[in-house]
Every structure is written in C-alpha cells, then in structure tokens.
Image 1 (cartoon, one colour):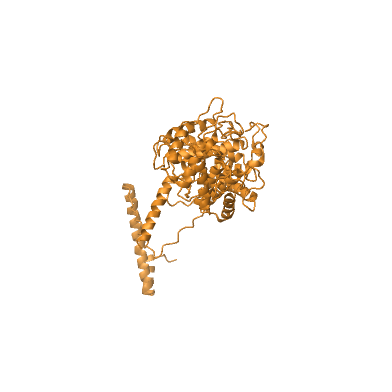
Image 2 (cartoon, rainbow, N blue to C red):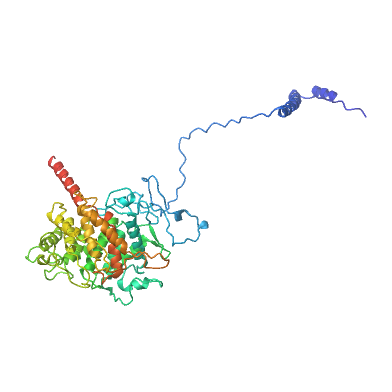
Length: 559
C-alpha cells in the first residue's frame, strides 16, 4: 500500500480545485496556526501576571419621541389623597398583605398619633385616631363655624397659650371610646338602655336609677355633637380603637347610624313627636344636623335639617308686646313665657344652621336677642325667666347641689356673641366679671359640680377672652381654663382594667343630669374640652365680614 503524503494531497487539490476553495483553505490554515500561537502566549502571560479587563458599558439608548405610559396606580380608597403634606403616615393595616395578617391586641394603644393632624383640608383620612405630641385636633375639615387651629397648647411646648393640652385631648379620645361602646345598635344613645352595654365587671350607673327614654333624641344629638365638634362626620374614614374593651369602631359608620336614627324618628313637621323631652330634644338634634350638613354639604341631609330649623322657628314664642318674636320654652308656641336655657340651645342651633347655608329668618334671631336683653339685670346678671330674678337660684331637681349664679350670665354672653358679634358690648365684661368669681372646683362632697355651667361659661369666656379673641387679656380665660381643666379631668373615670366599660366616662353626676345620666355628662364634658377648636371666634369672624362688606361697597361705589 502506498504511504499517505499530505503535502502531495494539497498540491493535487490546488491543481484541481476552484480558486474560491483554495482561498478558503489557505485562510483556515493560517487562522489555525495563529490561534495556536495566541493561546500559547496568553497562557504564558496569565502565569506571569494577572490582567484586569475593563468592560465598557454600552451607550444609553436614544430618547424616545413619546414617553412610555406611567405604571398603573392602584386607588386605595382608605388612603387620602394628599398632595400638599410633605410627610404622611398611614394606618399600617392598609398595607399589610393578607398572608401576613396576625392577631392584634386591641387593648393596646396603636397608630401614629399625628396621622390625622397632618392631612390637608378636606382629607377624610384612613388612620386610627390617637393623641400624642400635638393631639388629634380634629380632621382639619374647614367650615364656617368650626375652627381648625391645631397646636394650641402650652403643655405641648408649642402653639398658643390657653389652648388644649395632651391631657385634654386624651380625655376627649377616652370620652369618645366610652360613648361608642354605649351606642345602641340602631344608632341612638339612651339613658334607659345604658346598662345594656355595661360589662360584667362594672356598670356605669346604679341599677335602681329609673331613666326614661324621653330625652333619648337629645342624648343622641349631643353624643353626635362630640364627634362633629372635632370635624368627624358620617363620611369620615378614621377608626377608634377602644383599648378598654379591645374593639375597633369606624367613626363614619357609627355617625351614619346615629344620623339615620334621627332622620327616621323625625316627624313630618320637623319635630320628635315620639319623645316627650320637650324643646331640648328639638334644639340639640337640630344643632347636630346643622353641623353634620355644614361639614359635609351632603344633599341628603339638607332637607331634614331645614325641616328641623323650620320647626324651631315655628315653636318660637311671640313677643308679649304683641310685635315680633321672643325666646323659647319647654313647649312650642302658646303663651309668651320663655326661658334663657332653652333659648340658648336654640340660638346655637340656628346660628350653626345659618353658617351651614340653611334658611333662618333674621327676625327669629332678632327675637332671641330681644328676649335676652329683656331678662338681663344689673351687673352682668341674667334672669332665667325675667329680669327681676337675675342672679336668683333656678329651682328644680337636685336642689341640694350648689347653684352658680353665673350660669344664666354665660348663656346671655353666648346669645349676644353669636347674634350681635359686638365685643364692645359692655354686658360681656360685666358678665365675665361675675363668672370668673366662681371658678370650677370639685368640693369634697361633690355638690359644687355643675357641668352645664362649666360648659357654657367655658364657651363664653373662650369667645370673649380666649386665644383667638381680638381683645384677649387673659384676665378671664386663663384662670378659668386652668380651673376647668383641673376639675373636668379629675372627674373622668380612669379605670385601667381591661374589659371594664366605665373607663373614659364622666360617671359622677351633677345637678342637671337626673334625666340624661352619664351619656349627658360625658357628652357635655367632651364638648367643653373641644372648645379650643370647635368654634371660630365670632368677633374675629365678624370683623373680617365687616371688612369684606366695606371693601365690596367701595368697589360697587367706584363702578
């Protein structure tokens, strides 16, 4: 067999193959040879010294003519739209995946204490209501008659002197918790049903107290007012965790049930025919409905609220001179006998109705002012029924309690404040002089307690001499505010046991709580502690209104 000669084979292929094949074969042979040389040198270099290899990043792609669409944003309805605030903390529960939900001990305080106060105006929020460095101070929802000046407490090291403190705000929160745990399933509050909601460990009133349902409409209204006073309505998304009973309440849902109960019980003429609790029921519920409508402008509330206002106007007494209107009494119409107490509640209701945009005849307010002026005696004292009794004791149930002669003076101040808006009225200072002589205190026998007097005097002096008053001196408001806080906070139940329903309520009854019991006393004390932000200053508002009217008149005159 002949031997294989590769050189000869290549020569034969070269003579017989096309030139293209020859070129390919030559390049292949050269590439193979060079590869052997390169690999050998690279391996030798690697053995001698490592080499750092720089990897260059590719240039960024050229900008597109149209930007790609943004990613889809899920609308979490429980999270408020908040484009104004720089920092917002939402309720953690909103963002916990269902797979990570764990059991929560609702007996513990939880939530960002500032999560409500940093929301922009109009945001309903989805957070737990709490207290802390600045308190809750309401939702920040603006209205004509609700002030939202947060941060007003000397105890907090910031804000205005004479304002709320962490202690007052914590007391308000505990009062809300007490009210929510004693609300009926149908949305109402009732003195006669209170014990149905008390725990087995304790009860809020003695079993032998025989409360009637006569004032349940008014009690429902005043309980709702405690939430409305901080800006919470049936549209609110916040929740309150009752740490005493370990339960969570959603404020809007509880408020909605209460408002629905009122509208269901309302008669065609705008009154509560099923309750014999007199005009107090009508006035207090109208006040609540007016504020609920004013805060939300919800059209569903306008018709019943206006109907209630119309009834109050129709129930007004006629001036005994035979011309014009007068005040109000327990029953509607009839004779011309009116009293300062019912008249004060009605004036508050009609004023809130005006601010909410409801129709209130001016002659109704003028009549209230006529009656108030008539019952005014000397030295800032006011009579309950007539001027001859100015400063005299108002008799009735629980007469063994101390009577505070400044009570009717405080009501007179409120009527004049919200009807006339005249801070130069000399009566105001005379009445304030009377009130500041009788500061709130808790005597050893508890007979000095008068939550009704404390509420109206607090409201009157806050308007006249409080932090927002254009004539603030501190002479009246500062000593009163300090004494009021000491007395009211002292009397709130502070039981720290779990599953005890008494915590947060005002269970020590006063002279006027014989019909409403702890629902009345708890509600009116919460309202007292909300005075710092519940109402804008009427005198400052009037000054601005007058300036606006003068400016408009000047502009109209120049046309």
